[in-house]
Image (cartoon, rainbow, N blue to C red; front, side, top):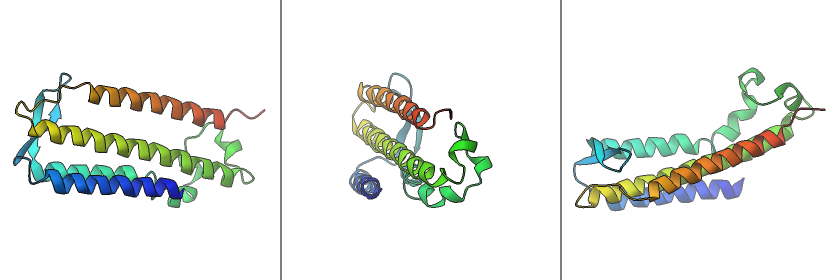
Length: 164
């Protein structure tokens, strides 16, 4: 779990460094939404854009930092897990939560990494003369994240099979 916390802290450091570097360089109005071909189709005030970035990172990091601390106190009725009556029974509950905490933390790290890279690409697009996000990078990142999410789900489902 410490490794995951260090990764989250590193990603926060990268985001802070990005913000410190790019904020003074960007115009007051930035492209904040891009269409499917990478053209700006929505703008935002620079300050608002950076606030959204910080809040998004804070929420996403909760998968790694906050959720593991409070997850075991969530009522079983609020947890959506295959065969939860079996896997969250008293004799399996602690081990199941250990797995879920690490598993959810890795999803949070992957989500944070995706956001840091996507925001970086949007910063660069806003600094380019054509204000265009027309590169294969966002699509490659999205495909990679979808593949990771599928793999992540399969691992979760295999870890909690139907009891025999």
